[in-house]
Length: 521
Image (cartoon, rainbow, N blue to C red; front, top):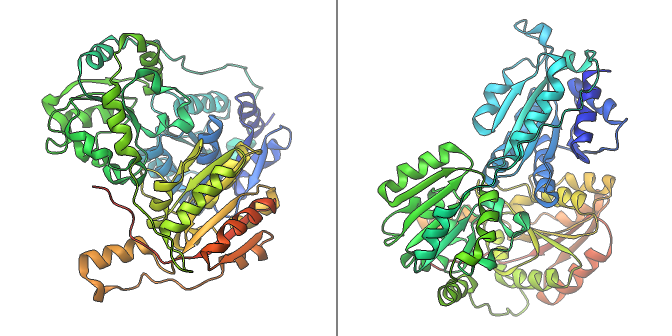
């Protein structure tokens, strides 16, 4: 068989059910090989879209997301999802075509050092030059992506290697077995603290971890936003930092989102950190100094499971837990407008819509409108644009989530700036029968930057951040989807429900007065 066939069969054997791809010369042998497996190929309109879809699919399915792109600009376009997946701690395998290994150094078509491009933002990046090692390399890559601190990996696949003959699959299953971590020191620290906090990295969010931290009886707060303490989904959580006397960071980097653990923000706290990346443990030591009483290179998910199993040994702190929960639940008051709509009002309407939807998956992407949506909307499963701060993947996240959970009602909220990155993926969604509802808060500007200009340089220095009143709903309709244009708050509910009932990829373009993101501290 060809090495391309070995690749396809290995992915199938490891549980891959969808590959998000954009075709190109070097990877057509893989397209051909996938025909002989049950793996679905979702063929996208942009390589970044393929990566974002794979990231979302991984977060909802619990599997390693797989994206397949061609060489040259194909790989270049796929870099952004590697950055977002690394920050969101999402297991993602990027497969890229490459120029023939036999032509190395000759200036072959799209010859480049791909590993040099991706190595700094992945857990593993390798170029395969021996077809006989391909199966083992794929198994190693998948294992690396999901073990320890999950994240993206990359395999570069020269065209001639993919076409080379291999003897067959050896059938090995390579997966690192999770250990049974000793958490006695963490249990002892939590038991002795008066006001402990557990900070959870994105991997341990409710959507992805599927662990019941409530059994511990102490606050365990997931942090997924680049706004950190100012994440509107966490209300006034930062007020609790002043009183916390112990912080256990499970997969949560000690970085800008927690103000680097600064003494002024955390005046009483001593710290324990568990992270699957040794570099993050070292960073915690550097930022915290003597206040870090223990730093462990271990899989946070396994440590979290072990702590929950030892919950009987950790006294609950009901009053402290209630205080922190109340702080996190605080939201700004909103007043209904006359006939217009602002960011707060549309977000409240979206919250009611999501609450009525069957098996909802909520996706939030964008600047100010995304922050308002995250403040008001809750759902059993959600994807946000994450700690990387990148915007633009929201439409792609919707397709990936729907492919992972076909029965779900996928509802994605974004601004008009965000929507422009991958609007063409409405055509992909129609062609691939992956319906969702995209709600665009259209304030006709890049509002986050508009607000930054206003605050920093003054209202007379607003420049180059305006957008037009483009009819994104009409564009979605022209691409085969459903479109609705809303200019009155009284029409929101009907438009949302009509979009959902259409059974098509839908765009509800809502004209809003943009507001600065809500701030609580």
